[in-house]
Length: 359
Image 1 (cartoon, helix red, strand yellow):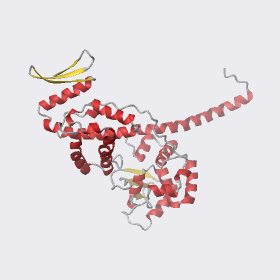
Image 2 (cartoon, rainbow, N blue to C red):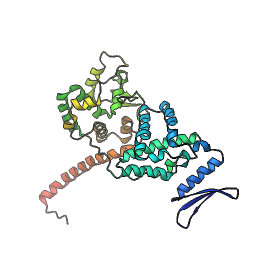
Image 3 (cartoon, rainbow, N blue to C red):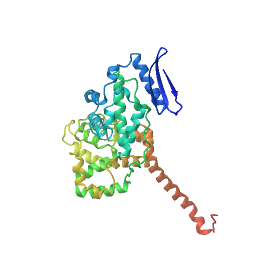
Image 4 (cartoon, rainbow, N blue to C red):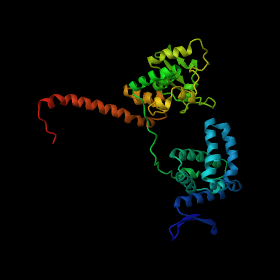
């Protein structure tokens, strides 16, 4: 077997048995030709079941989803069903009718480009990529193909801007808390709790009375699960448990939540996303923020208070320091402003008494 470049500039993969020609296929790109050649090599060496490799994607997907339902979180399963039963049939139906073993990286790139041309967001493309990668890993383990074509497929560069992070300052959070408290005291307390602990909505819903520790070195809550609306409780996004400190201003609210209640009862008052938005008149009182910006608020407040990046990462449950780097923009603005203020204080006496030329 070999891959050669044709006079027309394309790439031809040739398969031989001994010295006898067996079959060939021509591709626009060298890596697609090599991928096909590798799949043929694996199939001919007995690693891949030829009959299984010729099954179409649409025939294999039900078996895949049946197995995934038992092995992944409910939200992951729903997302993968959305990809195979909603997105691909609508935008890339041709992929579903291709045989599992015939798909190469270029085909996956065609899927991305089709989604882009039809106006789908970069986030949607990444969700499709994650689902297809899991699917082809599964087909590889099942002996249907030799490799995962998603791993060599290039994802189009993001063109739309990322959603802007808009945390509140401490003064803004306090002002909004006062306004929200007049509309719905319980929901205002929940908003301030999220804005000072960086818990995700599902993590706050999953807290129980037993997760609160007011007797330790400092008041804290133990975050070990998440309970999104309409789904069963599951692990946190990072899969890790963490302790999050409670600011003194939150302690009276938390004491009221745990008083006279059993350890296994929910800590928070009933939390419904839609009712929360309605009761606080969120579209008109949030100054264009999302609920998730309350999480950003807590993290930026920690960093601005001098908490080191590693500690803030541990408290917030981010998976890596790289994820924390986006908060440095907000921290740098505060540092720059403080530096400018110091500079002005140094220069002001001289500017008042001397004729200084800046040229």
